[in-house]
Length: 251
Ligand code: NAP
Image (cartoon, rainbow, N blue to C red; front, side):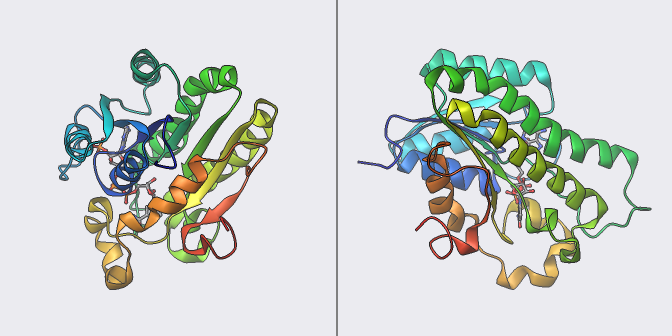
């Protein structure tokens, strides 16, 4: 039996990259997975939620593709309503949808890029958490996994003013939310996945310098499953690195 049998998980940004890998791993572990991404991706990159859900179903898993822009309040409410309608509960939320602006200076970053990154990387998790918390509270447990970055804690990593600031904001959002929802037995943790070979990072010229040593998104699966299984009595309010999984945490 899978480790996530009977659980319902929402994974945002599951049309490609890390989100798709986490959604597939959760489904392999027996979870029912709602996979979410924008109705029309403006990126031009390969992958969409129907494909991800189709791959999961073809492998014998349970998945539900939901179009949702996480920065849009009405779309987030509707997405959560649809998931509750279909599966009746929400045990796990993975805030993975993100925009990466790397290798650009403050003078190169436009106000529009700034607003989009902050909308997706910070407003998105705020809206999704706000939308799922009533269900998790009434269930008496839940786990929220926010995908952070070393660049959100270490300014020497090259994240730049926008990406690093947005991830730093997400980190502190997560840590404060963990305290706020502890009494409802809901865990909130931040997973820093390490440098990955995703479609999104492949499209950024800056990532080419360390491309050879980047990992495939699938390596994040087991650490993301471990975090999904936590509640506030077990493990909450932590910023953890995937590379340290099984070494300094998750033992
Ligand atoms: P990616 O390949 O660019 O994929 C990003 C995902 O986010 C896509 O599924 C995209 O879907 C979705 N997305 C973007 N804006 C959205 C919105 N407004 N609403 C809903 N979905 C949205 O990125 P990735 O490399 O897999 O990164 C995933 C997460 O890991 C991000 O939070 C990133 O910051 C973080 N991270 C990545 C790395 C790395 O090395 N790649 C390292 C550390 C942290 P659509 O475009 O189809 O909507």
